[in-house]
Amino acid sequence: MGEVTIGAVAAHFGRDLERGVAKVVAIIEDARTAGCDLLVLPDGTLGGYLGDLRSPDPGSVPPALDAHGPELAAVRRAAGAMVVCVGFAEACPEGSGRVFNAAVCLSGDGLLGRHRKVHLPAGEAAVYAPGEVFEAFDTPLGPMGMLIDYDKTFPEAARTLALDGATLLTCLSAWPASVTDRASRLPQDRQSRLFDLYDCARAAENQVVWASANQTGITGGLRFLGQAKVVGPGGDVLARTTERGGLAVTTLDVAAEVARARRVLHHLAELETPAYRRPGAPA
Image (cartoon, rainbow, N blue to C red; front, side, top):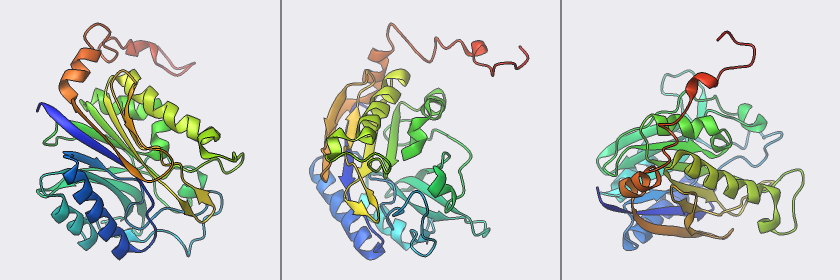
């Protein structure tokens, strides 16, 4: 594939779908001007995120969308040759009434991949159904995988995608400052530190390229961190934003950088999987 230009977005998105779609289209155009081949948008890009993680108001939750509906169709048309990852609340197509915190990866050619958030914090579990799988998928930029914010807290999630062949992982977040121990300044917040730590650790331990997008601003009682970034397979931050809105952009050869990181120490090849069993389980 050669060099790829990756853009990760920090921006605020609310309930207004028409405004949200227009904002996404404008960001795609800005990313195209910057030469981006891949654009990663936050969780809840279309329809926003929850306003309360402890007791979410059932009457004020993101609208459930069809992955093949008009909002995503507008994003596909705007994307053209660019690969775009975008988050939204997905109405279960089987008609069960369930809603997922979801993300799709698409281009003008159609849907390339989908992820439904597996790990749900308490407030989300009252609104969303959990996804059930982490799977890599093929794109024009190479094998990719997606996670949604809290998923990245669990090392097994990113590891599963890497073992499935993904060398480029994207994480779409609506990650807020601490709701129990809030700092006066966002960079000093405990969740700010953890957000960055997880981004760098997941990239380094799997020796993959990692693109992390996040919401900014305030929704209800939540204040989002921003801090979008692209991380190399050695855990080094290649580009980032602050807590304010912006686009973190970098250009690299994903396959070459991953191969270079794995040349001497290849974490996936050197896994001693028989040692990973639950205490007390039969050998």
